[in-house]
Length: 335
Ligand SMILES: NC(=O)c1ccc[n+]([C@@H]2O[C@H](COP(=O)([O-])OP(=O)(O)OC[C@H]3O[C@@H](n4cnc5c(N)ncnc54)[C@H](OP(=O)(O)O)[C@@H]3O)[C@@H](O)[C@H]2O)c1
Image (tube, rainbow, N blue to C red):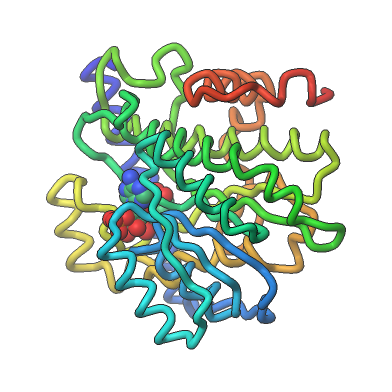
């Protein structure tokens, strides 16, 4: 990416962030965000990646409050054990546990899935939430650009390897659900299929937006695949809004200053940011419905290019290749 394109990507990401903040301010002035209320789900099992902080922590806690069994997939054992203790104490739900998973390592994702399957329990909800944003240029353990490798490819492989368990766990009227956390930045993202790793020039803004765009394309393709197989599993993408979390630690210092001073007013709290993920995970309104982009607990349109079936398939093919798994969608999806 040329310096000019990198500057353009940064401007677009900040512009989309500012637009969301204005919308959130207006909403706050008009009464704010209302916590959705759901029935307890005591027989359901959820995995939440990145459940140790921010939106993921709020999501895991809320699901635990709904009496679900919650597995927190995270890469910081000390922090995760403390979070598990805290959630158990606050929700009085003992069925909360931690399982190590470093999304930036395909080996670790495979190990996690093996350990999870070893528990011989069902999986009704998979929340692909963990992420990093605008980190300096660096690579994952497998040599992928970090946003692409961790935010996208780690979750691609995790979902892929858990599909059989999700399919076995879903039933008519009680679908298993894959919920993938994207972002409004996907609207200004570009998928560079011939340079997914940003080798021609790195832009932290472009790389983050691309990873979030890839997650939407992946979600839609996955839903086509699940439909073609007649399985009782749905896949939806969610957009949490702009949320006051540590995700912003690598952004421009001026943005961090604005967040520090106005975060309480302009940003969603982590709890508010989690509500769309929780809605997608449990609402009866979405039973059997997938392939949607959800924002503020409502369906909305994603970027036009995300509906491009050819692009979805191309990304899926490349992802299978990069993750070292067979392409199960070849020939399975009828146009
Ligand atoms: N905040 C926003 O405004 C916003 C807006 C749109 C979308 N999102 C998306 O929402 C999701 C959650 O973000 P957040 O705002 O809650 O950020 P956060 O507070 O920084 O939380 C990120 C979570 O991801 C985990 N994580 C990071 N690297 C990991 C790895 N290699 N393996 C496993 N887990 C890892 C973190 O673990 P540690 O606890 O160990 O750090 C943490 O639990 C992200 O996908 C983000 O892109 C956020």
